[in-house]
Length: 179
Image (cartoon, rainbow, N blue to C red; front, side, top):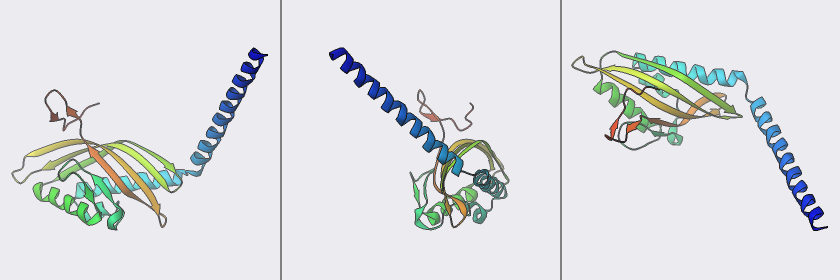
């Protein structure tokens, strides 16, 4: 009888686990089904406009990708440690273009976006070449993770994390990161 009780208990645990797995799969399928290709396409278009605006050094268009007001939060590769709010982050872009007033090129690769309802997240590799006042070129490859929200029918970045790998042996950043 003890063995039979143990088998029944294990069977119940397995049945419960299987039911839980089926429910989780169904819920994730519903979330994925709720994400339309239009939403993913809209976010990809936002990122393409963002990339073109950096190449054009158009800070106003760059900032159209971000939620206005105080809800924006960014970890960037340059000091300070964080930017809280749209106005603060706009100053960061203006400062970048003041240091590099010459031509700029910019591209985004490996963009991967996941949409769940009115929230989405994505990551990409972003490559830039900026030109300093003396004409010197500065190349930079960064890793970017973004969180997007659909607000009044438009996707906007609400949180961003920009980083570069660091060589732990030398403690130097890898500004031209390769896979």
